[in-house]
Length: 381
Ligand code: PBG
Image (cartoon, rainbow, N blue to C red):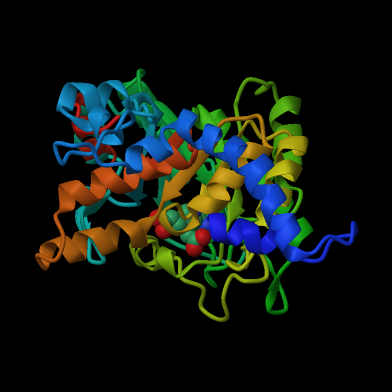
């Protein structure tokens, strides 16, 4: 450090001093000041050895890691099961409990079987669920999404009747309901933004009428938050919050979900509406726009590979921020742990705590139940 400082200071300066003069001046005037500063912070002291061959250190970061009680006391990230949301897939039909091939341990339920899972969640302390629907028939305009007797409408009615303590959020999107698998109605080979927004608004209203406590548009059309807020307000649902999937990337991490919901696009990809993963400033733009349009909660998705974006968005907005640990994140941990390459519990704990550390207030995850348990046990949070 000394050497570098001298070298830097010794460079040509405007006062026409030569290198040696400048260096001497620095040694006399600046070095003592720098040393004082270093000693005050303990850096210089830490580096010295004392006579007993031990380091004479005042500041030892390890001191605060010396036991489980202490480590828990000084944790910077606090977690609570009330901030967890579990995504559940409800399929048209009856008696269905189907394991999702790419997501071992996760199932598709029908309305008559979902109760067992909802009960399990409530018992574990997870009281918020995000509903995804798998309709019997799909069409060009995704009419199953806003049908009065659509799969989500039926699931909501029953869930709210049987479990009034449950908080029901619904994903609002067309891709599970369209025959082509895109998140809206098509115009040629692209999704028609404005026509889609009308249908999304209609869908959101229909969910609110069926009993949804909160709606969560995930389509990434421009202006949909505003349209949804308008239609909810106009129909008396002024107190129904909107959690916007505001910062949603076109991601390979959604592959298992599309398998689960049968919602993969039949041609092309979602890059003309979901975001390019090279961008984070644009994520802030999307988040701010949605807040302006009336979003109550902003979501960043996926989570694990996008924590930088999450931290940035958290700084930029003054509403709660959610992170969605998506199907591919679940599938990776599941597969690697089943192969014996990693320990599942440890991976669940670490990825969850890191998402909260990066700034999320709400965490959507297929591991919600496990995380609630680990929080209760004091392993995390
Ligand atoms: C619907 C939607 C998707 C996910 C949530 N809502 C799929 C997609 O955008 O392709 C992904 C969730 C996951 O992967 O767990 N648009």
